[in-house]
Length: 574
Image: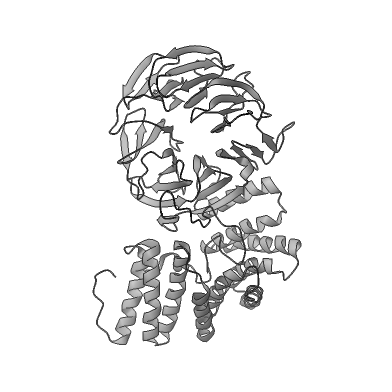
């Protein structure tokens, strides 16, 4: 069996966001001792990548991230950031202050309906007043009461905006017109969630809400109860799924047994297990295709309210867990961007930030397009996206697409900082890797050595990533048959790589595996056995003991043992 992701080229030395400089992805380090204990990828390392589009505390809690053709809109409780505003629109819209503690808690954009001027709404929560805003962020209507949830849409199909509010306790269910005037009220208890959806496919919206009994209630626009449904666990808070398939709406909710997904048209219920319990977490769900040629996957975002942590989980069509990540901040918004021809991308709205998650190439192409729209095509900050995209294309052996992005990354940084500036080291390294893969090894070697010189001084701002250049040089010399130099750089990479998380553990295993191969080929079996032991240890922690990477490590270990004349190792797990 091949080495999986390691088989494509030893020159791809690091992950997408690592390097001598560059913005981190969506997983910054955190020591917050609340919520799930472990931060970062806890299962399925390498299944997807992530990228942060924008960090800005002024956004508040982000309720929607929308990527268009050359546009980006981020809607948060603090305001709206728009990359390419239309005529008369501002790049930043701040919402009119309420003047008291009842600030917006869940701001969402509202599609234009008829003559209604409503463009944004605070959907409530924690008994905050319901509020609607116009395109300039000015308040159109604000309730004199708090509510648990607000749903907005055209219930009658008459081109007029309708509002439906749910209340905890005995407040019941209240329908209002677009101006906030009551239309009807229905007695209910504990209406924690309310949504509008076309349940039966007749083209008109129905009202869906929870109640104290734990059932789902489906009502007509006039408030008539059409059906009630009971599930395998009590229903409290729920959300409508963002679906990639024409199979009708579905709702998702968390329970003590796991994550529940219910197809509303059929009533079919599916249960998904997660590594971390999600009971009482606020849940969002989506269906997407990470690759156009693959079946859709289910994605869930669980916000552990009050802990400052969230969880993202991805599942295959058979409900097998593919990936799980714990984020060290609150994220309550999940959407799917479907614009890339190669695969869908998840857009996450979090506290003070917007991020993307998906397969590397579609993820980074959408990130680059969004940030170009936000910052302009010549912004030096875009060097990170170009460099990461070059690495992704290199990993996919799409060298003709990799090289222009590698050059562009270096060009942007040299314009901003000057030729030979330390900030250019990571881009030099990536360009060298691409050039080496295209057979231009002399130029590649010079650029790698220059990158090392820029990172090597202990006081260099990017010294902490010097290991990545040593790894790239080790791979370069290894492929060129210069084993002595390759070994020296591999060992320096291991010595300078910090032990931080699963991502760096994966890199340590990668370097150790290459060193073990080199030493095995040189007949130094005892040293090779030591190196492959490091690879097995770190791959087992990063991926799990049954992963293909670990099996590849063990296969090399057996070849080393055979070359030493030792009997095969016991099949028992280490």
